[in-house]
Amino acid sequence: MESKSLGVIGGMGPKATAVFFDKVVEMTVAAKDQDHIDMVILNHATIPDRTNTIFNKKAGDFLSAIEKDIRLLEVAGVANIAIPCNTSHYFFKDLVKMTDINIINMIEETTKRIFEKYGKGSKVGILATQGTLSSGIYEEACNKYGLDLFVPEDAIRERTMKIIYDNVKGGLNTDSSEIEAIIKELITREKCKCIIIACTELSCIKLSQEVADCCIDAMAVLVERAIVLSGKQIKGKID
Image (cartoon, rainbow, N blue to C red):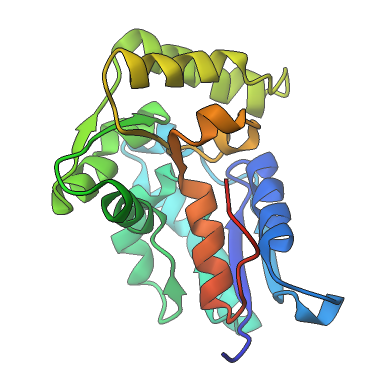
């Protein structure tokens, strides 16, 4: 397959963008530099916070900022665009209207993967920002594939937000013990077939293999699709 360049609209947040890049490099079959994917990465850290944008109904501020990134990627001539931020996909329909470049739909690809692995009617838990949860983007996608999406109670949602904003974005720590405890609780108490890791900040936390096997990480799915659409082969298994 012909090799194609990849555009990345990042900075949401910067650490998640760095992890996305590392995963693409790590998971691409390559024997030399020239075998890797040509990427244009825009680390747009000053783009408005997605959760605040949704709650404050200021879509215009976010869209005008991200449109500048899309124009830069058009000039760069990329074939596909990846956006390693779940919450930003609330604006996906608006984004695809801005350009003829293919934008990978991380939510659609993730939900499709769960359907293929677990089947229709499966109960699926989710860990995400309040913005992603309130946006309904995963609920809509799960309904499309006949999946039963379980949204955790307020206490778990608040704990998850604290991990995302204080621990990862705030740089306090990325210890996995707290998020792993939440995942185990949803699997054992709520009988979820799997848990969607639906925030790229959470994807920055290295989970034990036992817990990772119970999860579908949206960032990992995005990495895989980005590699394939760029005309490359995936190396091994993406956690």
